[in-house]
Structure formats: structure tokens, C-alpha cells
Image (cartoon, rainbow, N blue to C red; front, side, top):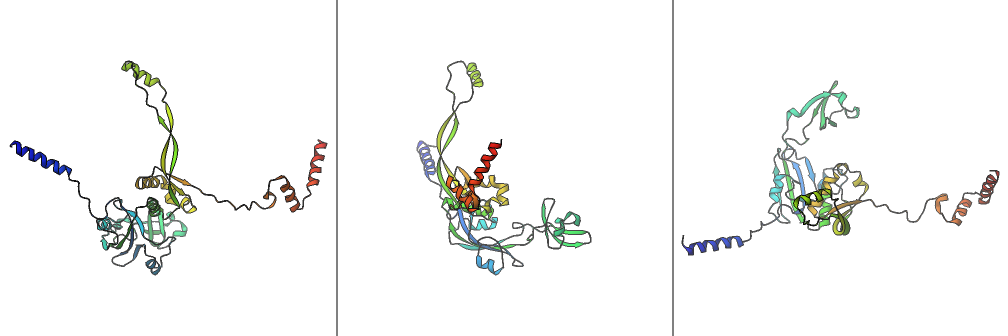
Length: 325
């Protein structure tokens, strides 16, 4: 290879390195989107889930939640894989229909997951066909009861059904507080009041020891004997404050998984910490009724008069008891 050819090859390599990779068009993994959808089984057209209030009303769905577009994060498995693949590369306003095969939806039906057990293992209130039961850490429903034996199907109720999933991409979620609220709602079906603030927080940091001019052996001995030193410094932390409502406090998913949920919110929203705080409203200055209405000197006498008690008589009785002692 001649010198000119080598120089040209080096120049071509530099040109390739200078070219920035093209961004993939449309929505990509990691983005927050609001998704509207209705999912039904293919064969019997049973409603699986919906965000449409009209569909929910038509189907007689009675759930204590608001039917509206749901916030999801692409690439995090928040929807069926087939639906996520269809959304990637799309734009806001795009819609489509995806058929999700049974094995990717709620699993294939497995006859081995149907078992016969003694009714003694089942709570008396649940001993009827159709009852949903928990047994040995598994959830199932009773199909038949004959004598003292119950037939329990541990398959998912929709196992073996393909699912038709109609969707529309309603919006992209950029606001961080809205992202956090969407994650809480997705995990808990609860959307608490929250806000992000920047706090100044005192932190203790380890002070690195100064370099010693002695021998390496002496330095190691000094390091082993020395107590670690810390210094306090003020740092800024982005804090997500979440109001602890009764709905949040009593949510079982939150009670058992609050650490994992909070960590996921921290990672995806990009805050430093989450603080859940309880808000107790005052009684509006009404005070407690009766004698506890006031604690000032004159207020006690007024309270005693209100309950028809003579304060002077009480004082005389107390003085007489003191004299007797």
C-alpha cells in the first residue's frame, strides 16, 4: 500500500468516527407514554381490561378506579411484548390492533394444574363452585364439589385465550411529577398527591487521610490504628414528597413492596429520594367540647359554671382536706 493510499484510508476512518449515529425515529425504549386501550379475548370477546369509561359502563365493570389513559414506560414490560413491539417507532396519535397469542398473554391451559383436594382444606365460606381460593400459595377457582372433594383449577381464568388488544398512543409524558404519579397509579391503582422539591440536606462524608511521609509499613500501621474521621457538608437533594393517604397506607402492594416501588420511581424519574409524609388537618379551632374547651385561668371557671359546678365549693373542700392532714 502506497503512502497516499494509507493517508486516504486513515482519513476515511476519521470521517466514519466523526459521523454520529442516527437516532431511531418515533417512540423508543425508556420513554413515558399515555396509552388508551381495550383488550378482549378473541374467541368469546370477554373484556380483559380497558381505559375507556364507556366500554367499562357497557360491560358493567364496577371497579373503584378512574378509567383513563394509563402511563407506561416502554421497554419495562408494562404491556404485552407484542403490543410494545407495535408501539416502538410509532408517534403520538397512532393506533392499532395487536393479537397477543395465549402463551404470551395468560399462558396456555395446563390440565395438570387442575387438582382434587379435600374440602377440609377450604374455608367453609368458599365451599361452592366458582369460588376463588388460595391454597398452598396458589390462586385458583373451584369448578365442582362432590361429597368431601373439591376440584380446583389453578390455571389463570383466561389461560388458553388469545387476546385482541386495541390501542392508541394518547401522549408522551415529559413532566417528571406526572411521570411519578403515573408509576404509582400503574403499580398501586392509587394516584397520590406529590411534588418534587430541592432540599438542602446535611450529610456526613468520610475524610480521606493525608499522605504520610513515613515508610509504607508505618503508614499501614497508622491507617489501621486511626479512627475514621467524618465531616458534615450541606448538599442539595431532589426529593419527591408523596402524601400518605389512607388509600396508599392500606394498599397491600405498597405495604409489601414500598422499597422496590420507591426505588423504581427514583431510578425512572431521576430524583434522589422519596419521602412519604402524613398530613393531619387541624379541627379549625373548634377545640374539644366540655371542660377541655379552654385552658386559660378564667376559662376553667367558665367551664365549671357551664357544667353546674361551684368552683368556690371545690376550693373549700380541698382546703378542708389539707387542714385535716
